Amino acid sequence: TMGLRQPLLLCLVVDAVMGFAGPMPRMLARPNLNPLTLRLPSMPSHLTAHRRPRQTFSMQYSSSSRSTTSSPGSTTIPDLNSLRGLSDNRTPEEIAKEARELIEVGLQLLAQTPPEVGIRRTLVGVQAILRTTRDLVQKFQGRGRAPTAEELLEEAPETLRTLFGRLGATYIKLGQFVASSPTLFPPEYVQEFQKCLDDAEPVPFAGIKKVIEEDLGQGSLTSVFSFVDETPLATASIAQVHAARLITGEDVVIKVQKPGVEELLTADLAFVYFATKVLEFLNPDFRRISLGDITGDIRTTMLDELDFYKEAKNMGEFRSFLASSNINGVMCPQTYPEASGKRVLTMERLYGKPLVDLDAIRAYTASPEQTLITALNTWMASVVGCSTFHADVHAGNLLVLQDGRIAFIDFGIVGQISPRTWQAVEGLSQGLVVSDYNMMAQALVRLGATSDNVDTVSFAADLKRVVERIERLDVDVVVASSGDEVSARLQADDEEVTQILLDLVAVGQSYGIKFPRDFGLLVKQALYFDRYTKLLAPDVDPLRDERIRSGMKRMADQTDMSGDVIDV
Image (cartoon, rainbow, N blue to C red; front, side):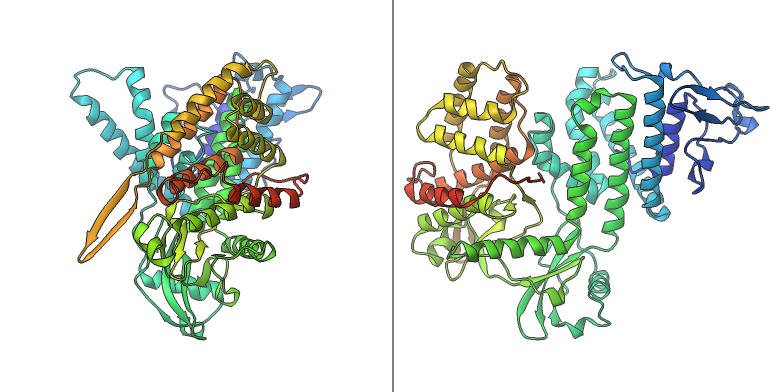
């Protein structure tokens, strides 16, 4: 996962495909290259002392046979059978076809990457790898011996997480994706990447000002805003937020994409995607775990986060859902299209506190229990009643406003649920209500079984142990003082929530059940709400409380789940 420039990797792949170990063919970058005929330059004489001679060669291929056209100074291409692994049943013709397709993908990605970005990322990647390698070496130096393979494997998750942090925005986002996807990645990596924090230095306001003016097509900031606070309210890897006021008088916040982030993510994600395609080519077993498809989905999802038009659309759809469902007491910030663009999102400014701030909730509402039920009812209804659901309902994204309303904010991460997953969730919920673990097991088997021979009785017993662990969860309330003010808030333990989800995934996998990612997203959000319930309404059982179940049943009855839905 280095930030290596795509031409370098592309040439490495061509060398591997052709069976040579020579220098990188610069001719490959020519736009008029015929993918069926590769002419590689000869090696400089001073590099050939310990290498077999290599000059130019050309390859011509047809579906019925393989032949080479030789000319003076040319070499014959190697037998493609030698490229096949022990479990690789591809024919030489299939390997050659896939090689050409791989080269075409590489050239397409190369055309999308500005050269200066590739060079800059190469330098950052080399520095990050050297620093991380040095740290790992120093860690083992005191032992007086080389580390064993087992010790290196134990260090791999932490080492990779450290490397991701040093590689910057793209890899921090990738790390967060790993942390939020226990249905896709090994548990030791999911747990370690919980520490992959999205803390970043703020960009100087001059750069932010330039992005705003360019994106809105205005010559001056003052033509849209009467005031913009140069000190950001918050900053993350891809954007930062500034308080402002429109010339029409409304208080707003501006979410601004950091300069150069789009080019950076495009280049890095192109490399990651191409690297997985290379791995699939060299070892077809990776296709069985859909490595390329998973990486392609990650790439699409992360690039979508760069398009603030889409986030504004998600917010608009959620507001429409609230209105059409006659849900009161819940809101989503209004956006201002005339002051927004692809890299700038202007929203109304909200004044409130996170849902887990006990004192604020008690000050803003007479019934914290009803506040929680309203928030939970709304989110669950949006899962089936809105085109997308909020897929990141941690405490910072749910606010209790000064007038008692609940605000859902930050729609950068959303999900869409498939009909099959929804049916499994319904079966799971019904089983939980009556403590029928066999019903729960059967629902999950229908969701992700890879075999018809699942021992549902044993599976049900293991599920019971997971559910009992959830019921034993305690909430930690942290009391903090600032001057004369004392506040209490929930200790948000993401690691504990993730561990429970990992336990569920592990139990499923032990019975040959693979859960789709939309199911994992749903369960994780439900676990967040479980912790909020223990804090705000400890006597409420969401699965048995009629105020929640009746609302869900009405929404489910009104929703057509028969259409095709795409996972995010």
